[in-house]
Length: 497
Ligand SMILES: CC(=O)N[C@H]1[C@@H](OP(=O)(O)OP(=O)(O)OC[C@H]2O[C@@H](n3ccc(=O)[nH]c3=O)[C@H](O)[C@@H]2O)O[C@H](CO)[C@@H](O)[C@@H]1O[C@H](C)C(=O)N[C@@H](C)C(=O)N[C@H](CCC(=O)O)C(=O)O
Image 1 (cartoon, rainbow, N blue to C red):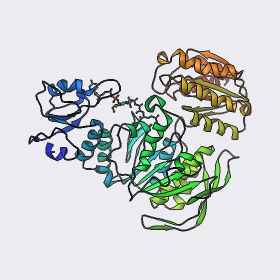
Image 2: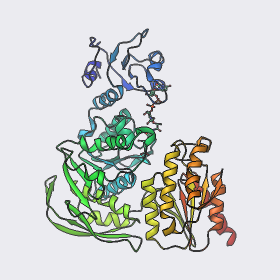
Image 3: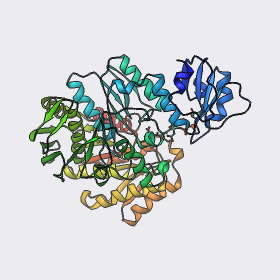
Image 4: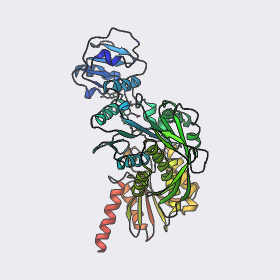
């Protein structure tokens, strides 16, 4: 693509004449630069991309987009105010605006993004749509998928994936939109047909600083949605509800408690472990040429918990807007097997073992609430202290456990200075551990602290009696915590036989 065409996508402030250059590719990491690239210098959290411009030139960059002009560099430099925004717009332009050729569904929330996108994708797929899925676990393009590195990829990579999906005849893409992505302009230039913000609670203070800034980032997905799009908002969540009149999008609101929206979830029954409820369309709405008049239909949900019902409501409404038949929605949700590490039953025998990512107060609250709906003898809780997220989140996580301690009969917790989602145990600080321990001590809950996760898990398993439930809370899934537990349980079974 010609440099001139690309630069029309961004605002260059140093007004230099554009050289007639053919650009092979756009890149933002010097080590990935190849001959003929336009290199975008991004000021990051760890380092400054401007420092790598000389290296990028050596590797073949023929032009650069910078925030600060760099002396002694022998290629044309185009100065912009914000190179992350520029990177996103250049990506959309280079890949010929793929999102406008796709039905794009953007899902945000503090908790439940992954489950909601999986549910929505499963419904669309069962309706015979060719789908893409982008999120924490995988990036799926039609029949193929690769493991994901981030929840929401960097803007340029995101545009590349979307373009690959267009090339592969995908029609519907459901994606998780993280607050980090919104803060760092990764989805700038993505045209959404449907957006949703389902719930908000404290998370990612290490990036946003305050809850207000976190909400500011999250809500921008809704606030910036176009008048041609739909916004699905949850009236039972005060933050989601506050956005009803803050968007140009057509709002389809819903609630379980609230009956003021377009869609109401009633007759909710969670006693069997599977959610059962009735979706009642209270106010008519039209989407993609289909009119939905006041009516109702029943849904059975294969995954447990009230939070799953909220996630399902978003998936159901997104599917109705996308023109999916109600029977497909019902059949899919009845069979939906859930998402790895989101209240995932990894073992169900004399004892049950549940793996949960247990990341923040909001998600811990719904996880413990789900346990409260269930029948079991004693809970054995293995809490992996969260590293690199600060003392506050560990203190607040502990406070939620304490809030549920009476109801769930938690008198003892097995804790481990082990891995969190992104860090190794060596990076868990004493402050982070102490913040958790202090709250537990005050509440008279005994903590057995282990350095190594396997030791903590073995203790929990050896303590568990018939009918007990072991909760692996933040223990890094099959590749670590759940894997260790399963190996031990399978070995034990083999020995018994
Ligand atoms: C805090 C954060 O989000 N950081 C992301 C950000 O990194 P950064 O801007 O700080 O980059 P940096 O490492 O300082 O480098 C600055 C620039 O120099 C360039 N560079 C760097 C080194 C080099 O040799 N050459 C070079 O050109 C880099 O390509 C970059 O452009 O941009 C990088 C490129 O896209 C991301 O990989 C990186 O994600 C890090 C790994 C990360 O862990 N992010 C997490 C917090 C995140 O985004 N999480 C959310 C989900 C959160 C949730 O809901 O749980 C997500 O969407 O995944």
